[in-house]
Length: 393
Image (tube, rainbow, N blue to C red; front, side, top):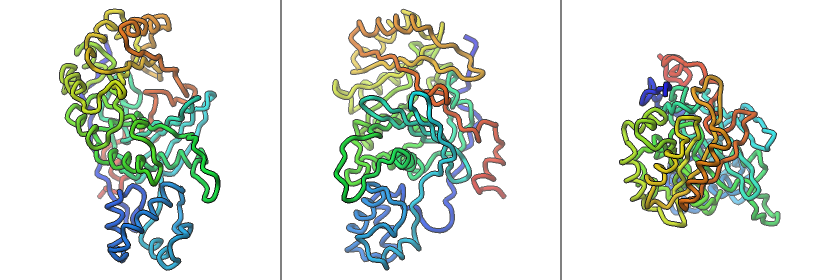
């Protein structure tokens, strides 16, 4: 196997420079919003109620203007308008695939751009959300991993992706209209650009907003966080977010996984599997998803399938087999359909669900591992990045 990748790239995480001026309401948790309202002059006795009212307007009704918050007095709305904004990422481009997949390129503070993908299916609509600009992990089969990490996204920029997609799907309820229980955006997967567990607090805060019953109100079982195996943060994920867990597994020996998923050099298979066996949310009803990209001649043999079964013994699991989505200059080829089916059959006969993921949005480079924002394609110098983030000089 000739492809190689370092454990991390030349990583320099730019700290988030908050813009001067009004505070963005989006991304604040309830406690932070309450504190901000008190600081603005809201009487303490009213602050909890006001937080609940504003929360519902922003996250249940999807309004973008304080003027629309009709259960608040005009004076109070004017005060809010002077102190706060309701801002979500700006949509730069929107592409729709032949299969209905939508890919949004959204711009965030500092002029950086990230990609967000909506995948409609018969029984669900899944939004694939990004957690970082770029990625530290350099997984050698992933196009997203070939760009430098620029910075972590804020909670506002993460939940903002969900709000942008709901805008595009026209899914905010209308006051007075009959309640519609069907969800176009029914599931969130943290599988876009970046490693979510390297941005834990912002991911947690954004997902708590998504799960809040008085707003977007998604069940924790409808949110899946995908990690390459940041072992120390996994128990925290169960405890503080409580969502489903998916693991970018992709290999059955440390030798191969070190190349495919270089974080394995830090937390090898044995450590990762120990953490998964003790993951507090694991049960037969909440299985861990093992993501396994099928690479021709690299990790797709019958021996690999049998080793995989041995490795995950005792872990309630399902194995998602992902045909490799090729990208220009990729060092690998997709396994043949016959090879993928044979691999799936071995796993299925051992008693595990082994669905083969249908590639979606390939014609618009929206498929798994293909996300890479145009602005970060050129390897930018540290000075350029700092200048764009407003940190130069």
